[in-house]
Amino acid sequence: MITLERLWHKEKDCLAVKFKYDTIISNQLRKFTGARWSYTQKAWLLPYSQQLINEVCKLLNEGNSIIFKDDLKEVEKPKTHKELPLSNALNELSEETQKKVKEFENWMHSKRYSSSTIGTYTDALRTFLRFYAHKAVSEISNNDVIIFNNEYILKNKFSASYQNQVVNGIKLFFRTVENKSINIESIHRPKKEKLLPNVLSKEEIKLILNAHSNIKHKAMLSLIYSCGLRCGELISLRLENVDSKRGLLLIKQSKGKKDRIVPLSLKILELLRIYYIACKPKVYLFEGQKTSEPYDERSLQNVLKQSLEKAKITKPVSLHWLRHSYATHLLENGTDLRYIQELLGHNSSKTTEIYTHVSTKHIQNITSPFDYL
Image: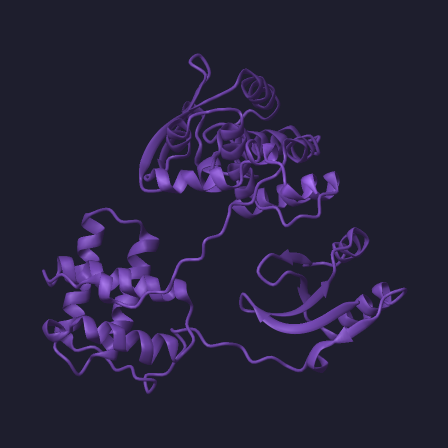
């Protein structure tokens, strides 16, 4: 049975195709332009159109029963917090409050916060202060934050992540500009989801890395896995970051503005040498179509997508799965958790400990009581 549903996902009108896992159906859907697997929706998503519905039904109708959920009625685009009118409990800021927000923004710049963090915190704080425009900033208390969460964020059905962004912005603002600490523990915050990292088997990794005949594509994916890199870290690598004599890779100013080094295996070094001779990059280790400019992040994602198709892997694999797999395979090979923490650039050991929950080294040695019945 296949269910077709119309929904709004990531600011796009989509046709969701839901069915019990089937490799044949998945491969058929891949043929459509713009088709992609959504992990959150547990469905294949395609750009919505009547023509596409007809084509999907024609392709999948044979041997399958197709259900149209809610008759594919038009879905209403959800409003974001930036689109809500001022009448929705928000007012304009006074000139004095605007100066305080600007002061907060300048403080973050001076502390060299990333531009995305500055923008996020400033927007979140501005929204909160507009809610209390009738009240002096110095009079705002913990209880006001709780009221805001209930009367604005929850009432308008904003996400838990946005709620946390607002709370973080408020906390930092009152500790710096206002020199007044708000007790975060008594503010209502949504519980974090405890999700396990997605991990591939070594066999699956091998299939993905060997799927490409293009040396650049193969080198990029191989380096991500062999060093546990984030996508942004890979495309930011420069030629001088590779220390082939010492067998090290220097990762500059990664997440949290930290430098770190990771070992380069002899195997990956040999692959990089072959790639360098073939492609001759000038500035960045992996350059795009324009010389001396870094490879595009979206293009890198497409490289992985092509590998998955060639390897016939239907899992919704992302580039970050390669990093998760690197950490898990290190742990299964007996590498100490403290070293893995350093290699991944984690601040807290608790972040690294999550990989102990997906490692199968010890779990596979456990015998189920069912076997003794």
